[in-house]
Length: 577
Image 1 (cartoon, rainbow, N blue to C red):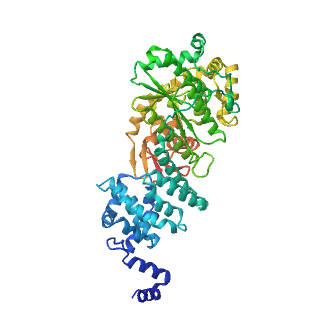
Image 2: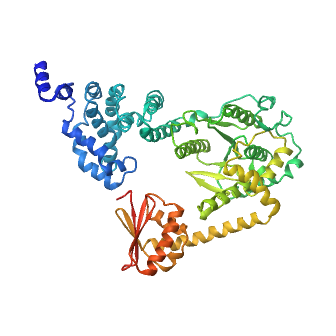
Image 3: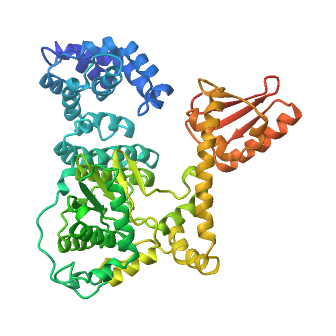
């Protein structure tokens, strides 16, 4: 009977189609009934060719969740009670497209339904994983997007062994073999995968017992300063320490903070550079010698990003230094992605590694810890000039404050008010070893730090304090402006694909930062360039003066239309239309 059906199908549609049809029709298991071909085709067409569906792959909305639910809730329900073993048996020989459609329903559609119903994606995850595992060995010829979604159930397992042993090797092999046009898919996939893995590995870096160093000689090639070694880190005359500006700043800061803080644990971010080395030493000493601080405990965190050939050796120095001070060290190694690698884009790399660093901070802090950072006044000057140069962050031109919170982690910067030269003075007086500055002297920050800042300090000593005062003034004005901006945005009308903005006289003279603020509050998907916003302003001024209807292109992401009869500006977000 099998061969009769095969021959009849072959005469009608050809061998490949005949084989696929028989695979679909032949009962592979007793309890799992695959979806019919027209349904699987509909799922794949919708997921991979519908413009809105593609746009919402990784940024869904409530409206889209309801749309998916209306379309596929019944379909998903029909295959939700299957047995994993039966699914694996079927998927091992079923057409790849059929398997992928089922995987999308179990793994992706279920997540949309979970936000608008009682669907539980975790209950369907084993089915998606069973189908995926049974199929991956023959998926080399699929395009990158389909490979990624076929592999997604395993990534969604958030099981460290599965991610390390199954997902990472296969996804990187497929990425290596992918066409250039498909590499973006794998870069996004790899960023999410590394983020999940690094989250799971957070506790790996817990403090461990290590021997105290007997010399700094093993690290001499790494160190910018390699003073004579002393066995007792704190064998320094109190007067020599107490007179240091860095010591005074750290002591004053900690005593003031304790008055309005319930913390009992301090965590020093210890890179091994002069700032963090001096800060960790001073805090460790203060906790020993200052009665009001003796109830505090101290630990340190070092993140080894693996971006330099010497990074492992640098981590060993930091470990030795922390042991010398008697400070428990969290040593976090990031070994699954590198800044110079082709696996992830630069922005994604920075985001993922920052997440990993803050997860370690959070774990080290516990419920009431605070992270201490070694930033100093010179860092704020670098930020100030960089922000002015890029026309951004007018609300905080200095880029940082002495007390802040990020991602639920409290951060303090005890040395923020002093110059870096004072930190070097402390390192020299206390004979502290520290790593050489790894900043590229040719990069913007390196040029500013090594060339511009010394000249300004020498020839215009009042300029930097003046800029600090200006930054504070602009920050104050920005806060006042935000209230006015909120009032103005409340008069705007958001519609699908854009927004309608009433034009007021003062808008024609407003700086580009006004448009950035307004568009952000209107949830514009993308920000036009500064040049495009300047063009918009001058164009609007001309059209309003002439009472003339016209349009203005704002790069590839936005278009503006002035409507003189209503005196409104209609802004269209091109990636929403």
